[in-house]
Length: 632
Image (cartoon, rainbow, N blue to C red; front, side):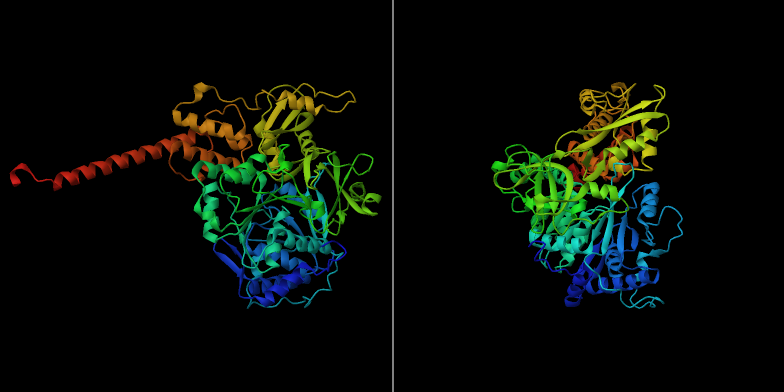
């Protein structure tokens, strides 16, 4: 399939055809709630009518401020059916970021749920996502029965990514691009009607669009996870409970799961899982090695790559069950372009490079974005016509790669300062802009700290008006009002001045070199502040998960960059070390090593007291059953 033989049908119309054929089949499930294809179709029609009543039409934009739920599926389909485009807003974002994107997108209305209201008042119409599932409710007055026909050039959605200017930029994806990508994914991922597919990502992360629509367009079931991230045991239990067959994970999280199963044994609950798709960042060779050595190669493993500007993903590599020659360089290939995509590697002069040489990835095909919303200059810099693609329109990704002789592609890094942190695209320029806005900060630079195996975080270097007295915890709190969690530096280092290269630019290589052996921003607690072996065990587990030399007994890991993935790593490490189970909620509630250790010791004491009491009761029972000397 390529752009020439692709027949356009809007996604919502394709879904409606499927729903008409299998109305009673479950389409979406989430924490005990389900929607059949027929119910999802009817609810989306009702939402579409309500949206048209408030002005939805082609090229209009509707903001969606929702978490994962069946209503999320209703909102996406209902918005597309109304003729408008959807703009995802993550409820976990800081209120300032939500407000900026809502303003920049020009949204005419916002759909929210009772669990995810907007964090501020707005003059826009706000629609309740749950009010459209009552099939017996009244019709909405003034709503048109059907919108005008959807054209391939009409806008389907606007997804905001990190911006180098310090402001997020909206990537505009048209209906034709979305439909072409989903048709291509149908060929690549081979999803079948009897599949049960995990929807893992959040609403503002574009793989979620693929995870929802690819299964729905072939009659499969979408199973949405809850808000809390699982540890490896919980993930396997979820797979078994829902008989999942297909799952998509961030690359770093897939490695975390494999390491958990390596420590505790591969659970039998994975037996239904036939395919795992990973992406969002480079796949670590260690993850592929574990997939093989743990005997999981019956699970088809796909490594996806692609920027938002090419509609979610652009290439895919199916991992062989045995090591291949193209893995010998210590990198996992990102494979070959999707059927509808053309890929060119160009040098700095715009000339195609030879096999084995490094070039910048340029993409062409029907899945390219229209451009950036209200940013014509930036659009022209990234999207352009080029003779290398037979005068087709190209998108310059900023990613470096090289071809193997077998036609597969190696990802080599970024041309600019854009990076992937835990699967989220982060523009270092945006982070630096926010850092320079902090009180007393004169200059700032950010570098990536790569601990290996896809474990990355940011380190900030700051020049302040006066030395000393600056609190990284306060800085993180202020940054959290403007940046997503992945973009907040885990380390803060203070300098009198930033090093410069011979041409006057910040010498980021020198900053990165200075981190080797350097302490982190918060001085780790002295060994003397650790009061027990349990405190030492907890502190050490947190320190290793955060990539620190040590952690004080009263330090809060969440103020030092801990994430939900960090929590699951610490939880599994402690359960393995202690050889007993406890709830992961304790790591969120008791946020210092001292507090958590006290709870663990208390529970251990209670368990020991209970065990001693049971032993005494058993002895007493045995003594009562024994015959006394005079009873013979």
